Image (cartoon, rainbow, N blue to C red; front, side, top):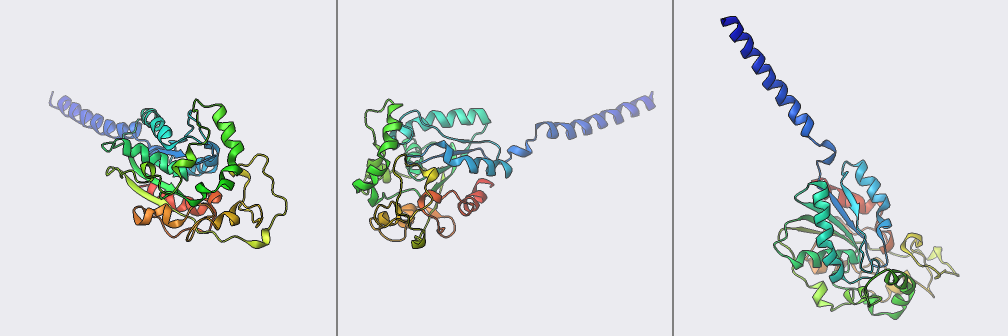
Length: 287
């Protein structure tokens, strides 16, 4: 009888040990140990600008990652409209990933969308970190230049045709210096804000005499130099201080309001998706 009791006790202890080993193994998620990441594109972009980052992040163990698409004038919609949509987008993403918090990486005007979203509810605790890349947090002088809006006019027409918005290009108003309802929204104290900027110097040797304006898109622009037609070197004249050809470094950091990750890279605005920017963002996303 005593021997049977000893055997039963040993068996019980072994079962406890086995269960203790199995349960953590079954419920652990080594591939999902990092917070999910939502990627937000910018003005006249779409979700495809993040294609390479989606691949890189998954290789680096951040498997829960998605690029946003807005139903309201995706490429040229207002920050207020996109911020409103982000409420449901974030909720659905959190439910899908079973996460209490997520990280956001936002490019250019997408950073304004994210800032307005966070400011709409200052008790919002959903976003752990917001990384803004090339975001015109204090606006950009280019938004006041008709040549800038005319260059991207075809894309805004295309975007608004599939949108319920009655205004074709409301995003341009959000990016103007002095757009205080957008650029001066308060910070959400539950979120850490970071910035990545570019300080680009054009290479005059890559001059092009016949630029094409038929279907402009960021995916096929590689920082060309054309002193007559632009877009970038010609546009740099409208932007004050060090800049990426569209947005000044000072605007990105908003006079020091947002922590700059590393030094500004040497890339122009449309090339702020390189390994340099990715390497600056990754340590925050892997916390």
